[in-house]
Amino acid sequence: MTHMHITSWVLAIILFIVALVLMKSNNEKGAKIVSMITRLFYIFVIVTGVMLFMSMPEPTGDYHIKMLAGILVIVVMELIFASVKRHRSVTLYWILFIVILLTTIYLGLKLPMGMKFF
Image: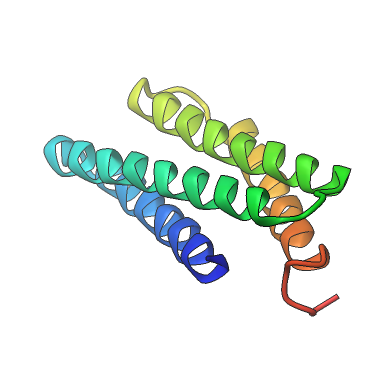
């Protein structure tokens, strides 16, 4: 299950970047298609994350924080989509995205169900 979760969020981030590149190059139709596929992967990420969370005998508070941070990553990705579409500044959202994404990845690797890098 962990591999499916990691694959889902990696593909979601790649599709997110592809959609942004398409938006910047004024390929509206392509950007819309890729952004909808990205949203499908958001669902995969959330479902696999909840399945991992439910498979733990007694999740600690750190897992709750990680789940909240993961959802915030998705929220900030959508805020970036909306701001780019409206031609508004996205600097703050990019900073939030990077900070929250790195926090989420760190927590995922640090916690007992994660890989033993730390």
